[in-house]
Length: 251
Image (cartoon, rainbow, N blue to C red; front, side, top):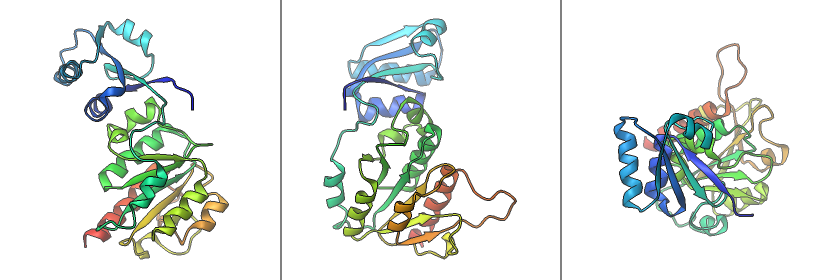
């Protein structure tokens, strides 16, 4: 993948980047004359890590980064899906020997960056060991995802894999059960045992799980719906399913 630059915006996302991955930051742009303690803390954090800080007027900051930024935009070197750490193959090998049953999240082709960001935020809150997404036909880790994730993009392992079906098979080889969500499944999420080593597999907006992904799953479950709407937004459904797993694991 070719080198590029991208932006991290938003207070929380910027804080986590400067704390967890400061070496990737090229420069920090801050809104000038904004008496905000959080921006002052960001300035101090960047200066401590010897990252150049530029304070710009509202007009100039908007010219440099015209989307939502909350008064801060960090220019980052590298690719938008690049993260430091082990490869997916290396990570998978660590799953079998864990004392606590791992909980993973697989997103099969989520294309809306707001949904991916919200899923990462829920994954962080639920203690998910990693989130797995396909490289193709899915959104990657861009500036919008990072902003919506409110820092979770730098705390949750995210793996973009070339072959999702192969990745699912690797998880099964390490003893993980694959639990997929499907609106037509007759088995309820609340009837499913979610306490063991498992990966929760969520489908894309509209299409849901692809056929091959669905066939790879060991169990298919649905979220009971009491109203007129037939399904939930993928990020909402992810939060519901993850925290049902959390509830069961804490019993």
